[in-house]
View 1 (tube, rainbow, N blue to C red):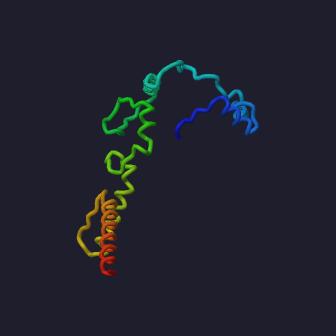
View 2 (cartoon, rainbow, N blue to C red):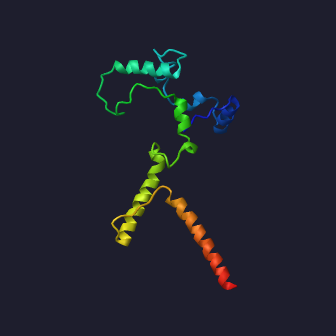
View 3 (tube, rainbow, N blue to C red):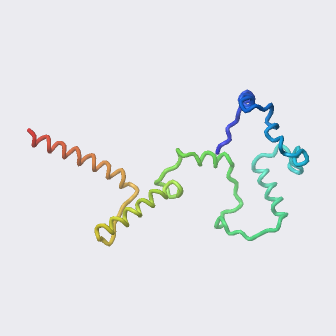
Length: 156
């Protein structure tokens, strides 16, 4: 879920609505000895890439395990802003093979349709494509229009 910043006035209004004086009051059940004031060893003012490097250096201090995830696509940086932008729904397209999540439903439906048609008709194969839905709709509209026109001529 994207981060949505609030103004100080927004925060005050929300705190008043739930009956507390500050955000810290929301965490008053946490014992004081468990709370920390800062992150020791994490320098202030680092950008995203520098923080990633720092965390990678610290991770190397841990015991290393072999990891084959990624199929060789390692050591590259994709800024968080890029992930935020490309995860927006309006950039998805069911016709792009790189967006499997967006097209998987259509692919499953086409597979089910082809399987059902071969079983219903006894044919060895049945074919469908991503464009069949729109094509079928256009053909149905044209057929209905032609039928209506033909029926209107007969009525005359």
